[in-house]
Structures are given as C-alpha cells and as structure tokens.
Length: 452
Image (tube, rainbow, N blue to C red; front, top):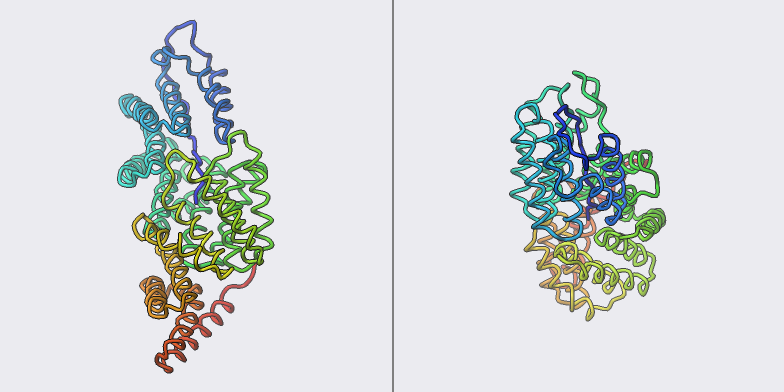
C-alpha cells in the first residue's frame, strides 16, 4: 500500500524567450505551476489541470524556453495518468524527457529530473523493468553532476529504493535509501542545497515499510514516526501525503498489538482522505483495510467485515484494479471470517487470494502472511496435513533470510505448527523443540526492542 507522491524538481535555466503575445510571463507561469502542483497533491485534478492549462496554453509551448516547455509536458502528463489515460501520459512524459535530453549538456539536471518522473510513471503502470532502467539512468546522470549543479542524486536513489521496496525483494531498496538519507544528512557538502522535508519523509517511510516487511518492528516504527513528523511539519496534518504516512504507521502499531493508537491514526487519515474532492481509491482502500484489522482485533467482527468489503468494492471500481492490493483486501476479509470461526465464508475467497499472492510480485513477508492465513483456515477445517505443510512453508520463507534476521512473526507460527502436530500425533520431541524455540524468540524480541 503506497500513496502516489510526485517529487517535483523544476530547476530554473536561462534560455531565450521567443516573443508571443499569448505566452505567460515568468512569474505568472511559476505561480500557476506551483498552484497546479499543490492541487494535484491534494487530489484536486480539475483545479490542477486548469492551472496547468493556463500556464501552458495549447499550441504555444513550442515557443517556450526548454525548461518551461518540459515542465508543461511533464505536469499535464501527471494529470492524464491520474485520470487513467496511460498512453497519452506516457507520450507526454517521453516528450518531456526528449526535450530535456536534446537541449544538451547544460540541461542534464533537467533531463535527470524528468527521467525520475518517467520512471515513476512506469512504476505505477506496473512496468518494473522499464522503471528500473529509467531510474538507473537517472542515478548515473546524477552521479556525474557536481553538487553545485544539482541535488538530484538523493531523489533518484529514493525513487530507485521505492521501486525495489515494492518488489518481491524489498531489501534491495535498503541500500539506495540508506545512501540517500546519508546524503540528505550532509546538505552543505560541496554547496549542495538542503533537500525538501517531503523527500526525506518519503525515504523514511519506504525504509519503515521495508523494516515492517522483514519484521523489524522497532526500526519500522522509528522510521515511520520520523516520516509522519516530517510530512506533517512540511505539509500539515490535513494533507493526504501526511495521511498516507499515518496509515503506514498504523500498520506497524497493529503488528505491535496496539489497535487503539492505530485506530486513532486511521480515523485521522480517513477524515483527511474522505474530505478530498477526488479521494484516491487505493489510499482509501488501504485505510478501510486497516480499520478492518483494528475492528477485528477488538472483536467487532461485523464492523470489520463491513470495512473490508468497502476496501474490496473500491478496488474493484478502479479502471485498472491492482491484483495484489485486491488480494490483500480479500485476505483481510478472510481474516475477519477466521476470527469469527466462519471457515465456510473464508474458503470462498482465501485460497484464490493466496494464489494471486503467489503469482504477482509480492514481498516474502506478505506471501508468508498469506500462507499463514490459509494454514489457519485448514486448521479450522481440521485438515491437519494441509495445515502442517502450509505452516512449514510460511516458516521456511522467514528462515531463508538466515538466523541473523530472525523474525518475531515466526514465533506464533512455531506454536501453531506445534499445535497441529499434537492433533496429528506427531513427534513429541519436535513439539517441545518448536515450543521452546518460540519462547526463546519472543523473550529475545522483548529484550531487544525497547518501547519508544
């Protein structure tokens, strides 16, 4: 569950301005673009498009200097993508990249910035290979620039890390994100400008989600709290970006068995997102899925089911429903059914949702959680053999990361497997070993993760 955030980087370049009575003067152009960007981030697409069109009248952008023409193409492309017109959006993103590239070496920073936006477009469109290649090119260009020319390297690294964090191997994102944060922490070196707080917040959010996927809950909470603090300080509590980071922090608190604080964050995020003129469906679905988890943990199963069904309905109404997000929402609903011991309803949706998780790009942690749910269903159905195989598979996913990455999520799996073996009449020695290992793991996690 990620919010769509465009880190806009519009450097100013000197270039000849061709005379045309319809051209917008520089100050008005900058103001309109800034207003349009603010409206876009607030999900007000009509206002954003209106501001962008006023800054970029049809048929005159050819007379604009390079930087303005590129900005026009890139800004309007973002609106087209948000409206679901991906072919047109790609053409405009590519046009922006091409204009900057053809402008020559002096415009390399602009070219790099527009490559980042194109890479984000490919990422959101599910074109991971194209996105990675584009981000790598942007990183290479940013490394070739001096600090006084551009501060684009941290941003390029953040976006590459974001792509990796949303893949089947999220740990790949840790290195570029860590490097980006290190660069951001030393903004004065070589005349490098201080990076925007929103970019630092995004890096912490992504690192927090990687930590969450690997079960490093203390680190995840620390990074996500920093992300929320930076975003709310820069944008305010009523901004959808701040709400998205609060939703992610709530996920960690739920993992730490703190449904009360998690619900407060989710309610705040719900208020902010539902107040938008055009609420982003994916973000609202994530909030409802989180509220479903909270209600289920507190025994409010009817309400939990209602929230989960809302999340599924929103995702199904999207032009391009994301299979992974839909499967996660269905697993949330199945989890509600399991807690209510309604195995018949869970059976109707859970096996298919787990199969989707196996097929689409998913983090190992997410897949392990899906398999664990299916194991719980088979245990409720007293299909001990299937439950044993599934629990062992989920444990194996975590163990393949090595003992140095021991995940506290494994402890309840070990106990569940021990319980299944008892019902099967399995080895008493293995049962004792599993229970002992679970106790040691929980004790170690408690001692090594002080509360913040």
